[in-house]
Amino acid sequence: MPTPITSDAEMGALLARAGFQLTPEQIAEYAEAYGYIVEMSARIRGERSYMVEPAHVFSFPTEEIAR
Amino acid sequence: MSTDILTISEAAALIKAGKLSPVELTEMCLARVKAFEPELHAFVTLTEDRARADAKKAEAEIKASGPKSPLHGIPIGLKDIIDTKGILTTCQSAHKLGNVPETDATCAAALDAAGTVLMGKLTTHEFADGGPSFDLPWPPSRNPWNTQRFTAGSSSGTGAAVAAGLVLGGLGTDTGGSIRGPAALCGIVGLKATYGLISRAGVAPAAYSLDHIGPMAWTTEDCALMLQALAGHDPADPASANRPVPDYTAGLGKGAKGLKVGVLRRWHETDRPVAEAVKAGIDAAIATYESLGAEVVEIKLSAMQEYNAAGFFISTVERGAAYERMMLKNPEKFGQRYRDRLVFAALCTGMDYVQALRRRRELIAEMAAAMAGVDVLLTAGNPDEAPPIDQVPRWDNLDKPNFTMAFNLTGMPAICVPSGFGPNGLPVSIQLAARPFAEAVLLQAAHAFEQATSWRNRRPDMVGLKQAA
Image 1 (tube, each protein chain N blue to C red):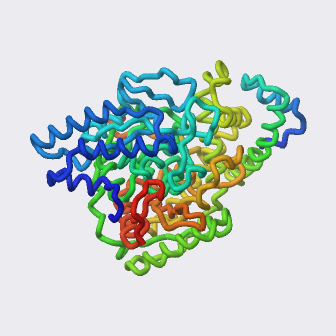
Image 2 (image 1 turned 135 degrees about the vertical axis):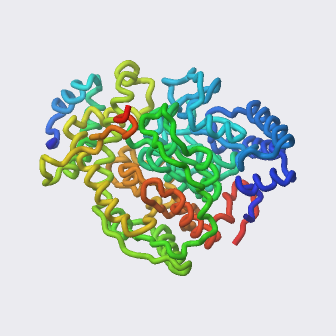
Image 3 (image 1 turned 120 degrees about the horizontal axis):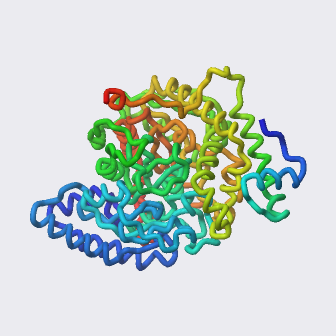
């Protein structure tokens, strides 16, 4: 689970990894937003079994199997 | 209806009876566009010549062999992320300034085939997310009930244009509430159909697995008429459902007797407490359904924040993937608010995305179990009246959950229907949701509430219409 960013350098590294070249001011602004993201990331991680599958696992439609 | 602006069903009846021509109806709408568009900014592109040509064609066809559908000769508008052959389609972005598609989106073609009159392309948030923005090539749309107020988005132009009678109906898209939010704040009806019921082919993506298309109109009946033309399988959309299309008007007028309405109090009382007017609308809806013979039962679900958190990661990462190349190549072409949303994608990890998808499966199962015993679920549409357009927080999709995302996450159909007015004279709304592909019962329940109330009798003051009750 992500932990809160403790420095602008960490935030800058994360954004640079995605290819974004941002100013120090912009990086500081996004650090504020990142707090909300960390909070939400905790919500999607429960005490679930590793057997619980994601929603995009799919099955083939019947008509495709028949062909 | 007691306003001077016709609904689709009213206009269709008059056209069928030979008492109104599509040309006359289109000129009425164009006159309202001329009068109110300078304040509303509902259109990115007004297709005046196309509208007049469509209307003349419809008039000739109807004279020759009668209307081919209730939409024949009806002026409509399309959100400007929907491709239209030969017509500028901007996605409200500097990235798409000269974009003229070579084909129609499937949903645009469906409305064209039904005989509609295309009035133009309607204002949206940039690529359907992040507004209101004041740094794009076009201004954001304004709320006809008070032009200093927000329309919500991203189908903002459709909400404003329908409320002010610039068009009789329009298309919106909805990834986390972009049809239902503007419907709620602009005082109209907005239906997000079940995921896969209306083709997404030719519509710019916001988030692939959460994107829905749907009609926005003054009444529930009008939404049903539009849905009838829009629903159906399309091989061009990999998510398109291949199933029969029922008669969506079949339940209209049957009332609510025998229906089971689930009420989810936790969301509007605890998770995101709503304004008094919104709560009054929900309470009135409960009382109305009971008086109509419906059974109202309490439903319990996880916190709204749970649905919103999963929806946030899925929408953010899918959006980021879709627009990554544009963002890295020309970030300056995006407005600030949309750029923010793309930067958020860089702050989410691959594990966040998959954990959100795992949570999504759990929440779909939870919702399905709750819905097994009811026909429709009742929630708030929006927590309050429309805020001032210049006071929408920058991180508004992060700090508070909304009432709409849960039904994008689960793919269920959901509709916002006006439920009154707040102390500022602005509309408020309830939201109803139903099981996947149960649009017919959803529309029946919404119509029953609408018919039992007087909220459809009042248009925005700016339109200069008589006010009823």
